[in-house]
Image (cartoon, rainbow, N blue to C red; front, side, top):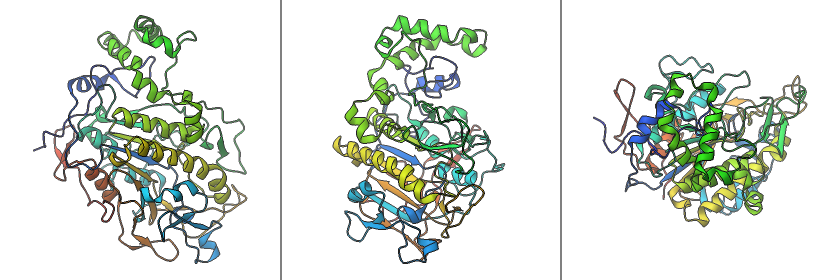
Length: 488
């Protein structure tokens, strides 16, 4: 039977739906009854972390250009970047990650994570669910199915005691991962646990032209250099995705009657829907959520002080990691941050200028600001930070002359590097290794199951814990062993 200390996730009756047809947290009315039922409880005593920030680099981070450089390999393997020393003796990383190099005592790297697919969709699925065996019915297409394995975010949201009285236990931001074809990448949802256990999606980054990539507006680039989009990238980061009338600024949100009229105005065209007919019983909860100072502060990152935005960066990467920090500070248990719309890190071509000029600068800056703020507030020791991708990239540099003038690397599930920090992680540790050309693990191969088990263990979820599907059948949360050598 289930450990009854592991209960349905919830946020209090202070939480409900956003103005308009989209929930402020991706919250539908099907979530409301269980959300209202729960009450906050204490973090498990054996946890080394209270929260986790899972930073997902969709597209595939190149291990040779980041945390596992091979300077002695042939030129078509080692690439163009030079390793630099870090604060940790003997540990070297890419020259274009200088901030992380100076903070290596705060993080560890696993260089030997491996799984059996080179496919984007399956790779996302494996790394977001912590399961490298497809679920029954998994087709590898871009459709999230009820038969999918539940995401790590859904499991954590369900298993952990809720720490905030007006925020959900698991959040994904700033957007869902949507393929350029329009299909939704599976693996980030409740799956067999049911849609009511989906994490909550803060849609702060509108899904625009999928052939623009990077950390807009400062670090944007075309997906294919030789086939650039015809229109400029005009996305505007808006957090949360709530549209108020021009005279309804944040200052007036405290005026509950004004906000109530605004909510009613936006939903008027849906009044005949059976779902919306139930809206009245929840609208006061929506107002309480929207007018809460801690919630407004967590979301309102584009209006943060200049000094804060200067440290994080005035771009989608910086704003997203600032929001993640504030949500953890406010009591969210797990925040998944998708840095870049789907496949931003898919560097089949132009890999060296793209990483050097467009991807590493905003990532290094924002991640360092996150670590600094967690450290300065005393939260780094209780917050596990994980940075990973769906796979690594090939050991051989190659070219796609029809799309790019310069070389890149292709998909490679056999080896990738994952960074972990805080939450009991032994700073400066290097776990596992790859062979001389960075193609396969040479020591201590690790799996998505082991990475997920590491997250669960750090958060204090017992290794005997289970999740329940919609038929109330129990399933083990752990499908692997926590990664050896990571924890202090």
